[in-house]
Structure formats: C-alpha cells, structure tokens
Length: 574
Image 1: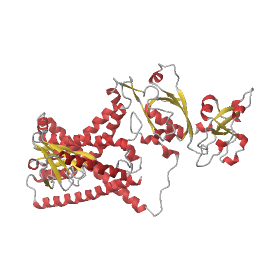
Image 2: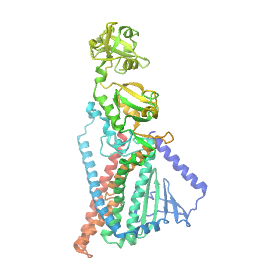
Image 3: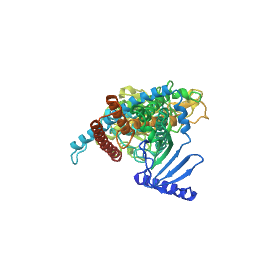
Image 4: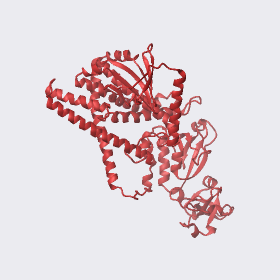
C-alpha cells in the first residue's frame, strides 16, 4: 500500500468517525478555539484543529473533544489516584525524581548532539553532491552481512532498528505503508501509546509529590498517531522553586528511561516468564518456522510450525542466531558450489540439454525446466558457449544432492562397475548457493518421539532470499493448545516499545516548540540564577537569560525541523 492508499484510508477512517459522531448526536456545547496551557504536557499537540466539538459527561468527570483529524479524551477521575501515590514515601519519590533531573538534562544534551550530527552530515552530503553522481552500490560479500539487521532475540523479523539502520541513514521517519509494513503498524501504534502514557504518568506523579494540582489526564489520536497528556494547574507550577519544577518536567523522560530498563530485563528473561507453556530451542537443535512470504521460493515447501533441524548438514544449535549465522556462512563460503557429485554415465545422459540454456537473466536456466544444468567438475568455464555439450547434463538437483556421494574430482568417483563422473551445478552467478534443510514436520519429530525421520528440502538460490522470506523462532509451545506466535508477538511488541520509548526520551527533550526540553531549559536556567543570586535576580541578568533562551530555542527549532525533513526525505527516497 502506497502513500495514496494510505491517504485514502485515513480520509475514510476520519469520515466514518465524524459520521458516527453526527449520527449518535453527542452533546455539543458549541464551538470554541482550543487553548493550551504552559504546562499541558503532551507528546503531541492534543488540540491541533481550529475548532472542536465537545461532549461532556459530568457524572464521570470526563469529556471528549473531536477535531477534523483528532480525538481527545480527558478525565479528572484519576486525579485522586495520583495524589494518593504522591503521599506514599514522599522523600523516596523526591529522591527518585531528583535522579530523573540528571537523566533529563543528559537526554537534552544527547538530543542536541543528535540534531547537530544530522544537520552536519546532511550539509556535507549536500556540498559533496554533484548532478548525475551517485555512489556505486557495494556488491562485496562483506557488505551483505544481513545479520546486522537481526535485533530480535528469539525470532527473525523486522523491528524499528532494522528499518532505520538498514537504510544507512542516522534518522528515518517511519511511514506506514512506505517503510513501515502495515503488519507492524499495530505494534508501533500500541508501543507509542504505552510509552506516551507511561511518560505522562511520570509528570502526574511528580506533580503530586510537589503538591501541584492536576486538572486532567487523557489520551488522544492525532491523524494516525496516539499519545497521552496531563494538564497541570499553571498557578501551582509557578509557585514551585526552579529545581522542584525541574523534577516535574524531567519526570516523563525519567519514566521513559526506567521503562527502557524494565523492557530490556523482560526481553532477556522472556523464556523464564513463559516457561510454563513454552520451551526454547537455543540449547537444543532446531528453529521453528513462523511465517513464509508468498514470494519466497520455499513457499509451499515449508509451512508454519515446521522445525528446521540442520542447514547443509550443520545442526542448528543456537536458535535464531544459529539460523542467521549458518545462512551467512553459506553466502560467504562458495564450497557448496565448488564440490561436485558422483554421477553414473547412464544417469548423466538421460535428459536433453534444454535446461543448460543459461543466460544472465536466467542464471538457473529456463523457468519451466524441472532440471538443473551440471558440468564436469574437472573442466571449469565461465562462458556457456565455451563448454562442449558432451560435458553438460540436465539432472534433478534434489535427487542428486540427497542420493549421490560428494566429490572434488572425477578420481573420487572411481567405480569398476560403470563409468562415473564428478559433476557440479553450472550457474554463472557468484551469489547462488545450494542449501539443504533437514525439516521435521511435527514437534514429536523434533523431540525424537516419532519414528519419522526429518525430510530434506533442497534450495538453489541466494541465501538472502531465505533469510528475508522465512521467519523463524527459537521458542516453541510445550503443548499443542498453546499458540505458536504468542511469544513472538510479545517479543515484537516489547522491541517496538523499547525503540519508541528511547526515541521519545531523547527527542522530547529538544528545547523547542514547548516540548519538555524547552520547559526544562528554562527551569534549569532559573535554578542556576537562583543558586547564584538568590531570590532577587538583577534585571540585566534576567534580560540576558531571556535572550539566550530565545536564541537556543530558535536554533533548536531550526535543527529539529531540518531533522524531521531529513527523516521524511530518507523515508521517501528509500
């Protein structure tokens, strides 16, 4: 689905939302231009349209605001809950959020370093660019290590780090349907919602510790991005000392940091949490097949739930990491194409040579041929026209690989009963490999409880096609009643949440556009001046502070806009 389809989907979605709202006849208290207080801590603007329609439920203390492409729900019914948390061990909570001040200021520095680095690298690329020039693609084997894209622990598959690092750019915007698959959008949506809610809970709890009144807490949907917010009473915040105010402002980022550590721990201990219903294959042998893309050559040969036991005779003993390593080893090592197979004379001459009509576009021969072209191992030629016909044969690849002994030269195939030749597949492509998979079709076969031996599947092609088209995992259910995909759905959600919460922690501390970073920078400057001058700051110093803050926020805003533009360009250009 491209950008036009995405735009059409969003228009249809919001059209249905407005249609349902009109049909339900929700209470409307007129229209007004929305306002935003200085301490409305939202990760995205919750009221982004010019006018809103409000339906108010006084009994529950909650209300809904609906814009042209946004929905905002807020409530004050949870205010008492946050206030009760604030009175639990207030000294410990103050110390906890004091650590958050250091974390917030560190994230502010990191955000500025990130924005500056993006701006610098972009400027260098622009100055070095020449019309019609493009860097040649790196086709070396060293540039084809797909293992760097494997960020999941227990399964192979796409996550946010893979989508951003795989482009070679420092920052890339994720656009559903363009560089974010729609199958992964639900994980991204939920991860963003969880990370933002946890962020805003930090502001609310820290405000309760500092005896700041909370007006409301809520969530919103802005176009297609979810978020959360907390509205604090402005007068209460203004009465706080700068350092106390800084604790409230940095509490959201500190919660994101603690959430990052918690998710990291959950990921590494996931098999222990699921040990009642699942077991890992990391210490044993095999990897379970989770998905096969329809475009994959192995579609129809592998199915979900199959256990891959070995690759080219090497046991798969390290789960997902072993799977990636063995595929990469076969890509880097051309031994599978250099070794031959002992072929008797009567088998070698059984078929015509139509399959040997090899071209650059069809390095495996005609697509409608069921046979593979073989040539004598002792005589190697790069050009098909240089090979005499008597040195070629069309043979069934799978039968040859499975049933015939391997060889390196014809003398290895000495047989007194009949003439035997050492032959290997003729494929004029440096990246094609022969890969033989031993596959168990059931858990009983994998555990050794079945007398049925693993089946052999022979693949001829680029190992990267296997890695991209087949998703495997290293956690399997102990009983058939447990869903196979549950651990991997949980793992993927945790990985997305980890990536999103780290991004929010850093980018939300940019001192611009009324983000937490701008509030934190102002409070930090006030705290420094209070420490230096006390409660009375000289007017010239106050003016200098205001000018310096305006300069920093303007520069940060320019850098942030450039970074967003570069990220969007990176997503659209890939």
